[in-house]
Length: 245
Image (cartoon, rainbow, N blue to C red):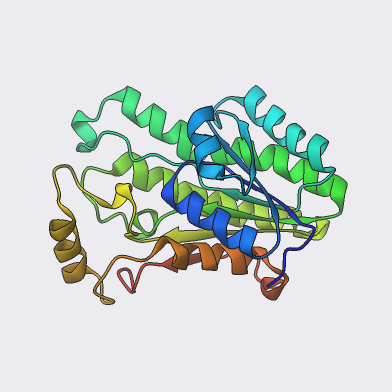
């Protein structure tokens, strides 16, 4: 899959999955722009292989500036991967504080909405493109007690993806989602867990018997964004080793 001459924007650019997605697109020939809230961490994540722009996906003005910056620098936006996401402080619904709920929904759901709002406009001007949103298998099945905000926001990302996909496919914009399960990232650990604890827990719950390598999730994102997936529209592709099969 070649992305030579393509410009790719990845939000949540300092996260482990975003870094793996960066590598996948760079290796496929793309010009990648990472976006996130921490300039020093973005510069480190880019590793000289990508450009970057500081932006908070919950801030409409920041998101508009982020997309405009990419278009101004490279005259186009071909692919967007909306990967910014947070778990938030866990807790059962009745004791979950409003601030946690609002923060998680703002990043995970409203952030995706805002990014798509401006990414779609830029892609329409360019004659089309592809968007891949990062949802979660927890959103698909919601089996993690204490993560109601996270699960709800990610389930909503899947529905938002499907709705937007039908709205904009006539404009040549394909919109899909990827729902990873446990991947070898900091977010896969529960509070106080060691690597051995995490691996044992996942092995007992996932038919594949392990967490995914972030590169496996990145390869899925790359395929969905490529011309190889040209007839895949509005799909949420679960990558979780059979955990929700």
